[in-house]
Image 1 (tube, protein in one colour):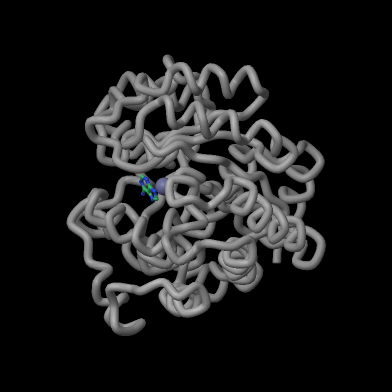
Image 2 (cartoon, protein in one colour):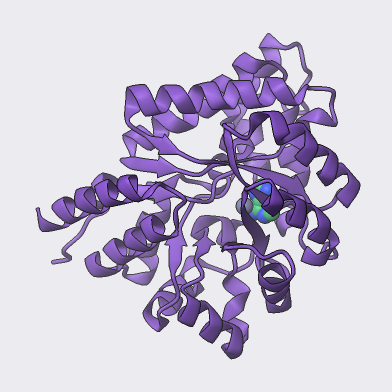
Length: 337
Ligand code: ADE
Ligand code: ZN
């Protein structure tokens, strides 16, 4: 009999380092907010929305994802969105999270930056106090927009550096290489932000090299294309540069044909600091537990591998040293049960 089970994976203490808050918008909340804010939706009901979540690639998904985000208008909407995600974390024993938000998706529609950040940061503060979930918030720039817009967004964030810990880069990867954002990343570093970027999701391994060398990022979001480049694999292994991998997302967006062909465990065994994350859970069929469960069901994830994946997430996180120590103890205690 296997040492682990679906319920063990749910109880496993977990850390999430790659989740877009806008990607946690469940269809039920989308309809509730659309009604509350009198925003028309192109769907007649929750089931029709769920049926529409069939994607052939990243762009296909992004088109629907940006539509969904239009129901978010007020501080309370951003609070409700974030709080719903954090309750899910509580249910799945996710103890520390480093969520992304995309301010440009909202400021471009006339929603003030302040409204977005206040709603999100209030929910994160409440989660720390009431649910015991710690967090570090990361602001992403949309790479399909130009660098001037990213610089404007960075300037807007200057008032909120107490709430924003790092910056990232997301949206359409192909045709929008890392170097397009070299100035804004350099300025963000000068402001004291931690730096991460999506790279090597649909784009080539060379985008990972350039994110490391030109943008100076410390952690790569996705990065699964690294496996095509042995020299890059050596660099990732030798320097223990973390990858925030999102298994269900990769299958939904056809980066892999099926979960059985996903390379995350192969990379883990080669010594890469890979971690498990949900990306856009409401669109891709699951949160943290469902991602672990899928690795177990399709790739035979072992207890030892599951524990190593969580250890990698603790190492790769931006949590303060003391919190990391606490997280290691919780994990060790759980492993010994
Ligand atoms: N924004 C939300 N999800 C994303 C993903 N998987 N890749 C790039 N940008 C995103
Ligand atoms: Zn992502």
